[in-house]
Image 1: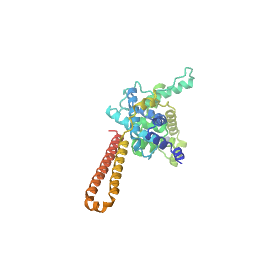
Image 2 (image 1 turned 135 degrees about the vertical axis):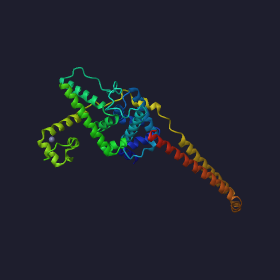
Image 3 (image 1 turned 60 degrees about the horizontal axis):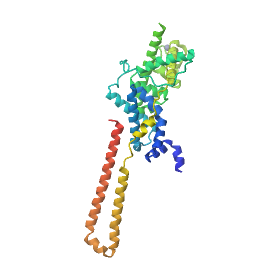
Image 4 (image 1 turned 90 degrees about the horizontal axis):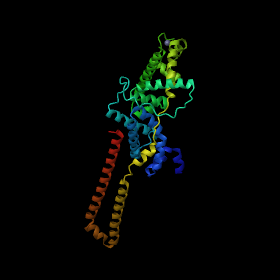
Length: 199
Length: 148
Ligand SMILES: [Zn+2]
């Protein structure tokens, strides 16, 4: 009986195991959620050393608070929430919360996410796409950390406005209007870049 | 057909979910090449964002985190010990009563207020401590969740 219940709710099954002292189950939770945590942490925090500290901090918070998790949302959404709040308080401490748009020289050196090895024999179209991708990446870096995160969650992680609202604690209307402004800024920035290139 | 160009918001909405835009917006789009170009700009942008490389940690997160996890608090075992002590105490008191059953009436009349008083004090203290501990833990968890 309990086994079938466990399979129908894998989150609950894993959490129960962790609460019973099974640390390997917590490793599974990490493996299941670290992609989302990475996406968020990279979008909000540019310093690599700080990212390492933050990810530890996030998962220790997850572990310590797991007993209080009430399954109102998916486990990954709850972990996203902890990630967002942890990064926001980091940004607040470092006074970087409002960086972006008007603050273009904010620690950009190690901002590009880690990627897989680059193939050496790239075709012209791959190079063209790579160039575009770099321009877009640069435009993304000009957004504020919050706008950048919202864009990532919506357009890359394919989350709904409602889910993003749960993670960020922002009302759905605010999420929509931030996203509208972020997309508009991105588009304008890209157009400006393409025009510069054409000249 | 709308004579003015489509609002930026509606252009975005059209690209994200065309079924949500008004009929007149659709009609305008069919005829206006300028707005069609704006649609294409957003289509390119969204495709571009979707195909950006996803961020990944360049270290093993589980290997980093697992050794740092705090040991599970021993609170629960203290609690079990506390409950066990109360149960044993209650058992001993009951045993005392059984052993002295033949004098129960007498005992009841003579010392029961003291025994009842003692048991009450122990029980109230135990419940009080448990409640306080629960409240403290709840407060700490709230504090952690607010990430102050
Ligand atoms: Zn138009």
